[in-house]
Length: 66
Image 1 (tube, one colour):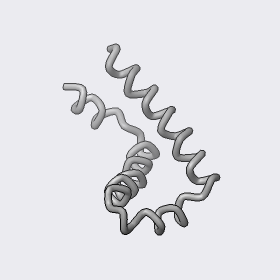
Image 2 (image 1 turned 90 degrees about the vertical axis):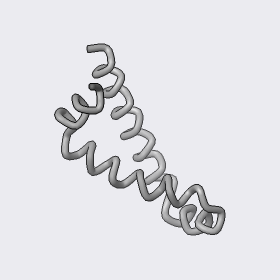
Image 3 (image 1 turned 30 degrees about the horizontal axis):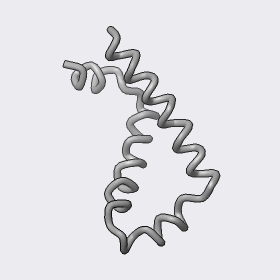
């Protein structure tokens, strides 16, 4: 049920953010890709991702309370 709510209410911006995170998660699992990821994830980009993640997590927690 929560997945249905999430799919119905997710903002385009949040969906794009998830689309950005998925490849990073997959690539981070493989040691041969870690050096390449370090180059992609600058300090600025990492902070941006963390801020967006916190906002998205808060939104999901709000949905779960409903």
